[in-house]
Image 1 (cartoon, rainbow, N blue to C red):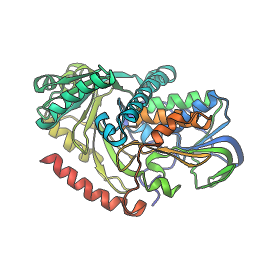
Image 2: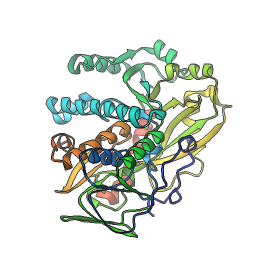
Image 3: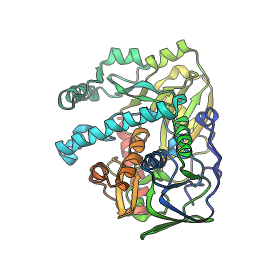
Image 4: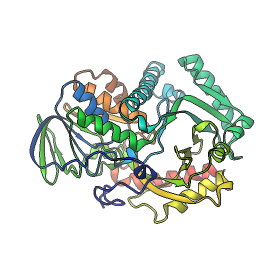
Length: 433
């Protein structure tokens, strides 16, 4: 089964609230015949679009292909949260790579947020960036760590945007007894992810990027130049960037052994009043909780609760996504039991063994950037920028990301699903205890 088509019709966006409230650019033509370019990018999500824009700034001729449409994958389906830091916190990174490299990774993460906000402001103001992410602890034992971490970030990294919250303040911010403390990070925020992707695509087109939709890459031949093939085209390029994340499939086995696709799901409620919204989440902040199988939510511009939760491991989505996600939503907000669900959709993201992005130079002229593990709005934007700079000869910061250990899943691509399912069962049980 092809993961690109297991749950979606060719060239169609999923039935999400995002797709219902965004105007797509294009459509762009399929790639046909023999083509040449300085750079061929596979995947028109945030990574690919950002790379294309930054390459054009340096004068490179760029062909960008996607099996479906621009922003069709995780870039247009996610929770819209623009998180600070890396997917691992700084304490974990200091243990993994040491203090000096951990500080460099923090600086890159800060750049990822700044770059995303700047690109959104310039090319997609309609994406509506709103500041603030609440990190909500579902167990009291996590609350002291949240306070200590905020203090550490101010002391060791000069970051003063995180404010710890006790139980009373968290209950004031989120209208649920499910959370007993945490923190508020005003350095991050949230936006409309598909409008952001569409804005990047329009900007890329205006800068001369040759975008081709409905053009699935079927193979890559290493060499100088490298060759990317589709069912209708053969693209010869001096450089190639693989920007496929969870939708890589079998295109490159080395990357597939390190980046595994999993499915996540979101629902949108009917619109509420502004007053009702404030009783659920104050201040129009986004929320992510402390469960391993994370719940995340925020409000749309028209006062709908966009609630993400539930994961599946396999190719197919469940038949009733709304029921799957409604369950954790009502565990947190039982007062919404009579609230209608108007949209329900799923998407596939790429995760890694250690939850850090996987940056790799597969060959001298072929880069792979993926594996954002649910932290990809800002980091994927930066990933494209760093890949573009590496191609232009400024590889230092790409190499900082590539230097983070990225172990293969045990058993490689063949065994990653059954082993992950066992691990997720354990962590799901741990969340309940």
